[in-house]
Image (cartoon, rainbow, N blue to C red; front, top):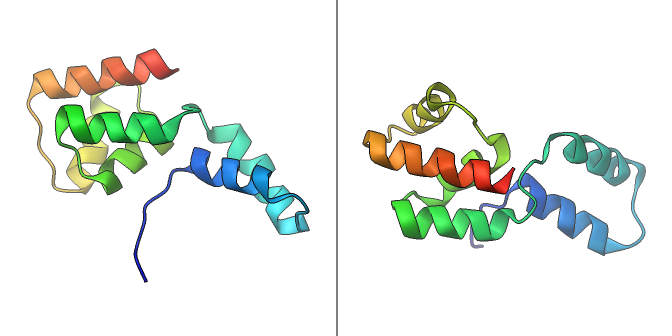
Length: 100
């Protein structure tokens, strides 16, 4: 079985495509809709991987949280033991701002 990281936005899309939903799935949709900020998270994640060399699991977490400050982004990166130079951090923050 292959492990694949998907964002909350992608989960939301999959649930909405499913058709008939359980109560739990409907509750999940309501919950996720409150927090998803980046609608095309798949493209955003691929862009972070390509442009900044961010691993998919970290890019997915960035898409889900959508940090708006250097401190928030640095905290996410540090939780994965990933250290980026200021230019890359600013570039990622700029990409997030474009998506919001």
